[in-house]
Image (cartoon, rainbow over all chains, first blue to last red; front, side, top):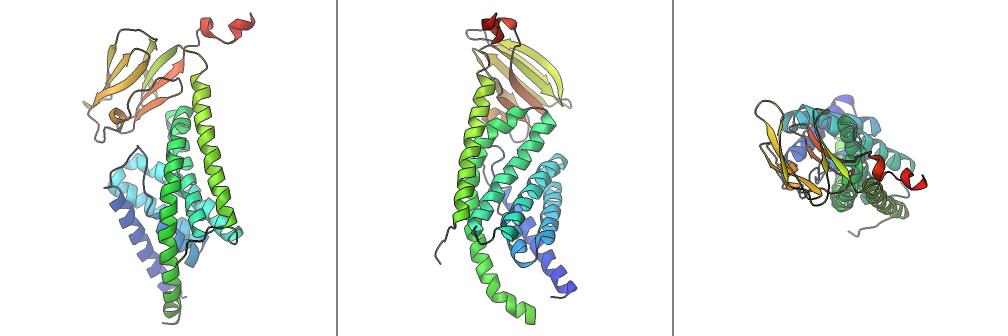
Length: 171
Length: 132
């Protein structure tokens, strides 16, 4: 695929991830910090069709822009830490152990490590490990559920795009 | 399309269970160190209040000023602490309810307020006292 084409498609992916990130902000949450993580669908798509470096770019730009548009400046730190950690883990699982993990497993691992990254930054900023311990169980259980459905959705969209990909490649 | 889970996914779920257990035990280990606590209230990492809390105490209301007219009203009572009222946009601190074990925290991110229960460090309740 040529450079301009991949740049355009990456731009589209980032904007889609951004919209998902912003829409999800309007959803009611059960506990503080609990989110669906729909934008992770686009990260998984980038990991599958582009590569680790591109996925990291998508997640970084989405975190910064999403936090500036909706969350506020402090949210950038949480969002970036969670995003980068989850991207590292998902990239590692996808490129090293792809034969052992399904998309659902990779997405769940990503969701869990997103929480770990965010909580680590939060407890570092407030200087208290209590935040990490008291939120981790709740958020991990939530991540199992959201990671499953995000993985399922990614599975469908990746299957669909794989079919279309050849047309893009040749066109 | 059938949903196919692979062998590695089991490890993800096992890892999640381990994390939940580690979190809960970590919380209780920090909480069970002693039965008397201090309530420490911090604004922007600076300690504003440090109040002792014990069973059967009279309720104490603390007005925490986070600057620019932003406030959190903290109520310390019979062995537990909660933020009763706040003018932050999301009110997650009020919704998160009361805490009663040391190591537990209530966080108000928009106001950068942390309410934390810690051990008193009082030698009367120290574990080492038993050895003496």
